[in-house]
Length: 161
Image (cartoon, rainbow, N blue to C red; front, side, top):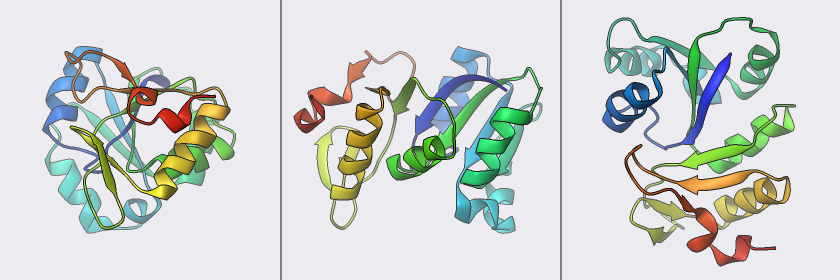
């Protein structure tokens, strides 16, 4: 796989991804990495309906995705989508090499605090981000490609050394 972007976005496939990121990065394949969705035919069907024809979509569990990254020889330009930083951390724990993760949309919910316009985090999210940062992963915030690239540390100072 030719991975162009690894993105955390709790909505996974939606307009910002399909219109913004796919176009800007000339993405040929979306890869949704989520244990629950990988097992849910209805969810997969609904997400596939949001994707324009010609754009390939794959759904993997965390474990399946880590294996696919190592074994697939496909040269398609890919965008990997995760719903949470905990999933990205687990993916890395399966042996995936990560250098940069784009933090897109993490919406408000019970136990979450809003840290910037598009990102709300729980204690578990912060711990996962800390672990990723400590493993050398750059964490950047951009909802769409045209946004200014900002470090997540700007909004979560506890990520600094």
